[in-house]
Image (cartoon, rainbow, N blue to C red; front, side, top):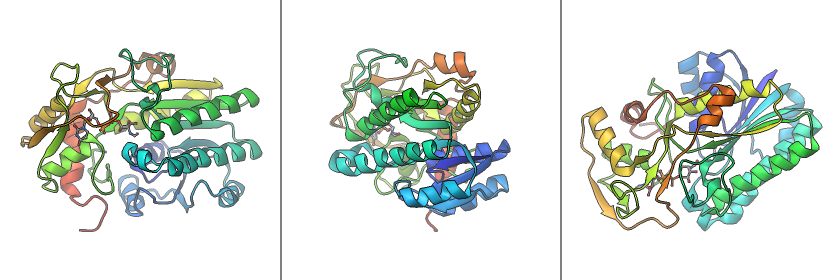
Length: 339
Ligand code: WQD
């Protein structure tokens, strides 16, 4: 009766594994460490006192994944494993197609073979492309993705919809994340980007810890209240709870369901910088630079469907996330790398 968590040593995966273990679920992790470190397993143990069974496998490796399905009695899958850098996907689109779509196709094949009926898929708000209005609802137009990463998420959503048509006993939750930030309150797990962070919050925390001289604010001429980009920043622990809620929803055999996981509030770059400074009583130096290609003015969720149908909503706010992100970075100036 195990929950298979692919990418379970990653940022959102590890926070979800901690929660599942605390709730008494039997968790099996599969990860190839392409964007995470073995140290995460030690931290999960430190927080929960439990050691989930772990397989170091590339989910694209069908033969090895089949062996795992033979060994473990998998009842549900949470599929986090995937490359997720927008910038890298523009440079290496085929790698993203092969990896993100390839791994999902392997999982669907094995789900069919081993009669695993339930899967929760980690999708993204990027599937909405350039929004012509906000807040975004699940039945809003999708497509027109501004990068190959977002397109792979949309393509996988399509694969899941086709799989659901052919498998009437399949229960599939597609979760569209907005902008995950924050860290577990212990400060033991958090976001550990490799190289220069693409995303805003890890860049801010690296400025705060002295690893970067200042933050580049990509554009201040957007059509927003202060000219900087507006996003829906959701605490990663709220996101983890959204996956727990989705697992429970699948027990009611809903077929295929889609939910936005966001706070429903828009926060600008400068809003986040000011909140971070206030929450942690420090100063973040920044310089206004040119817009980043592919960025949109604003993007935030209407998350009311997740509340209506799963009873889930975000409870933590950006102040909690700023405090938790800083505790993680302050305690781990080099992320999971040994000091
Ligand atoms: C947020 C805002 C930037 C960095 C992407 C993916 C999404 C998800 C989250 C994977 C924008 C500005 C950023 C910096 C800045 N990824 N910014 N300086 O682009 O909204 O979303 O990451 O799951 O699917 O699409 O997030 O954090 O990169 O940018 O000014 O150094 O911060 O212009 O307005 P984004 P982001």
